[in-house]
Length: 169
Image (cartoon, rainbow, N blue to C red; front, side, top):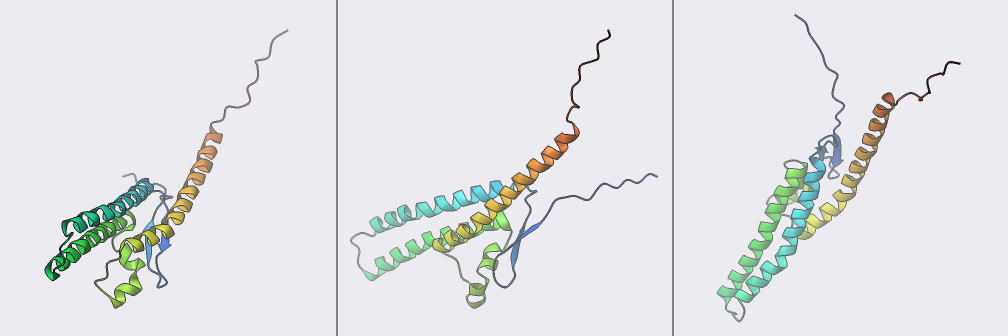
């Protein structure tokens, strides 16, 4: 029986520290879907956030002129549901990019005090503003590494200096 062993993968894992307690998200720039997921997730969260004022405006119109306690409470609950819906969806989007529990890790100190905490839109914007430069740096490094590796590979296949065949006299 013949046995063969292939070389270990050169794929790398990068840890992004999420809090001062040492929790992290693990990513790999060797995963071609990482940057697509990140870009699509940021776009989704931005679109969800942009839709909030319109939804809240519709609720305001629905309860316009109603000042009784019951109407005020219904309006407040409806508006709260819009914000809660955004936050729950945003948690799912971030977790689909960086792994399950990323938001709980990032806001760990708050979750330790308030287990039912749900970050609002401003919290997600702050998180993405911190994460974006990290992802840009990782993507830039990946592109540089790919260019160097590609160049090195192509060096092997560079044709030798072309010389005209000697002419006989």
